Length: 216
Image 1 (cartoon, one colour):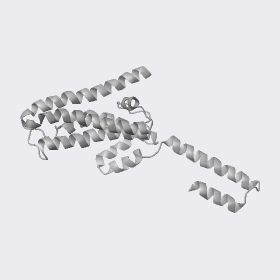
Image 2 (cartoon, one colour):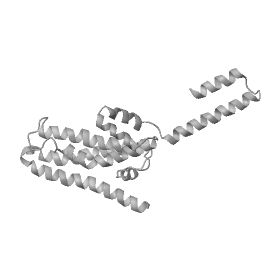
Image 3 (cartoon, helix red, strand yellow):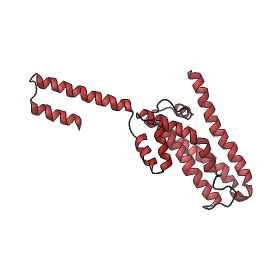
Image 4 (cartoon, helix red, strand yellow):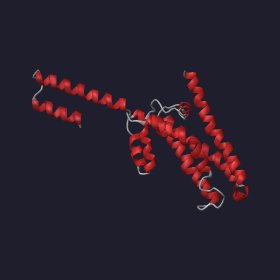
């Protein structure tokens, strides 16, 4: 099963990466005249941007002692299972910086704020990348929500625009298992204090102070 899942992950990454590369090449040729003297910027800009963003994400991953290969394998179409907070944010950051920051900036530099080519509302470097990364992004978002004990369907909040802020709050929360472990630890400690109070080892006042300290 693991081998099968690994192959599926590799296929997803290949489709996203090579699909975008092929589509952006076609888009560049289609807009050859509109791009004009900035054609080299398209090539070297993509390479430089990808390397820079990859370096940033790899550096963050090292700080969290995470393997970048494992992070890449999380870019798939699996809407089941869980995804840890650090893993999610590094992947999400990489996709966001490339698609919504770098490529948007590249589009503006090359075509301006009001592009005049046909279908400009639907076709640009950033839009093409969005089409290829949309499902993998939704998949990692769903698995992160599962990790916090929520349904992946919460991502329907995307449609409300303002609901994106709510999703960010959910994604930033700790793993549900960690929460449950902390609650269980608190309950166990309060139970121990209660036993000490019942045995007369601590006073009611000491019990109340210790309990208040644990709960805060």
